[in-house]
Structures are given as C-alpha cells and as structure tokens.
Image (cartoon, rainbow, N blue to C red; front, top):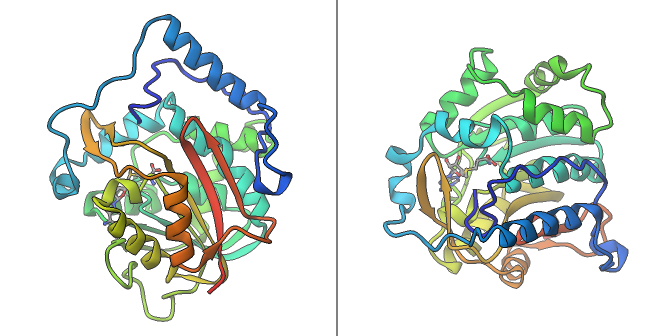
Length: 304
Ligand SMILES: C[S@@+](CC[C@H](N)C(=O)[O-])C[C@H]1O[C@@H](n2cnc3c(N)ncnc32)[C@H](O)[C@@H]1O
C-alpha cells in the first residue's frame, strides 16, 4: 500500500512472535520479524529498486466517493496479501486481541469492505460492529453479512489462524463465527461528533475501537487528525481501548490503481493527539506500540 515500503516481494510469513512492546523496556534486539523486513529491504536496494517518488496528481479525500473501488481494493490487498502493511496488520492484530482479552463491544471504524478485524475478535468479543464512510464499502460489508459477498477471504484467514496457533482445519468456521456476533453496520465519519451513526444507547460504549489505515488518509492537517482521534475516542467507553494501525511519516499511498494523499504523522504527533483525546499508553498491560519500518499498530487506553 505504501510508497515507503513499496516492495514487490512477498514478505514470507514468518509467523514468529514479535514482541517489541513498551512494557519490555524497549528492548532493542531485532526480532526475526524485523530481520525479515531488513532482509527484503536490503534485497530491494541490491536490486536497485529505489523508492518510488511522490507521484503527481494525488487524489485527496474529496474524490473518495467516486474513486474508491471496493473490488479493486480487496483484490489488491486481500487476495494474496503480498503487501507488507497488510501482512503487518494480520501478524500483529491477533496478538493485540490476546493482550486485550475478553471484551464486550468492538467496532471496526473505517473497516472498508474488510472483515479481518471482526474475525480476529470473533472468540473474545460479545458484540462486533462494522462502520465505514463510503456507501460502496458498507454495501460490501452488508453483502458479507448476508453471505452474498463474492470474495475469497481464505488467504487472510489462514494467516490469522496460523497466528492463533491453528492448523487451518477450522478456516471455514472463522467467518460464520465472526458473522454471528456482528450486531450492526454503520456509517462513520471521523470528522463528525458523534463519529458513528448508531443508536444513542451505543454511543460512547465501545470497549474497543479498531481503526486501520484510516485516519491518515482522511485528514489533510494535524488539527484535523487530532480532531478525528478525539471524535473516535469519544466513542470508546472509559477503560476501553483504541487499536490503531497506520504508517508514520508517509505522504501518499496507492490502492486500486490510484494514488491518494496521506497525512505526514510522526510518532510524537500521534502521542500528542492521544493525550488530547484522553488516551494513554501508561500502566496497562494491553497497551503496546509495534513498529516495523514506519508501519505501526498501537493500543492506547481511554482514561478520561
Ligand atoms: C485504506 S482504507 C482501510 C480499510 C480497512 N480498515 C483496511 O485496513 O483494509 C481507508 C478507509 O477509510 C474510510 N474513510 C474515508 N473517509 C473517512 C472518514 N471521514 N471517516 C472515517 N472513515 C473514512 C474509507 O471509506 C476506507 O474504507
């Protein structure tokens, strides 16, 4: 997905545990996972495949409604899952789910047409909710819910199952198990408050709000980014968690054959936004920041 890590190589599924959490004293020993990335990065440099320059004519969020192609997005990222950013998500999300443990309500905010977040939480959450900004993505989610989606999720499911310690014998039960817990599919907009168009009794009651590769692509400025994090945080119950995946220090991304803008965000900027939104990473064993070559997954707790 990202220009920074624009590797055409498929990153081998190492499926080895990578723990680089804040609660293990920032240990700096490279994990096997990091070494794998380094290996591919080196290979890329040796083959003289240089980073692609920022392309001209980047599309911004005003074009999402017309330019977002749901089927191309799924095809690009979830058929073979060769993209390193998606591999990062599928590698770390099952670990994050285990760190959080049993939970009542989980929402995937900016889910796109995807279901892997729901699948990851299928055994630990009581209720699952899906939300996206674009009608074409909500339509795809509804089709999945109605068992009418024409997309084969088996590659991502195998990655998740492997991370969970499975042997792929149970793959066919993963989607039904997730589907059974889905209680709603909603419109969401990170610039609005409330950010999720759900009933009043659900507002602010989500114990986990997951948002992956979403905020950076919607926001044009740091102020917008901070406001978006605040709006999402308001939907999280006190003591609940924000689980966010994204990329640091990137200015564009590519999917469905189109190049979109991406807001340049550093780790420090993200932490500042968390603080302003009442989110903390201190004193909680579920909180963690994984980062590999700028791609990250973070868990922060809603404390105020
Ligand atoms: C790159 S996709 C990520 C989809 C999915 N989370 C994944 O990891 O594959 C970004 C998503 O953000 C959604 N989005 C766009 N504008 C938004 C907004 N203002 N608020 C919330 N989500 C938005 C898009 O509809 C799209 O599904």
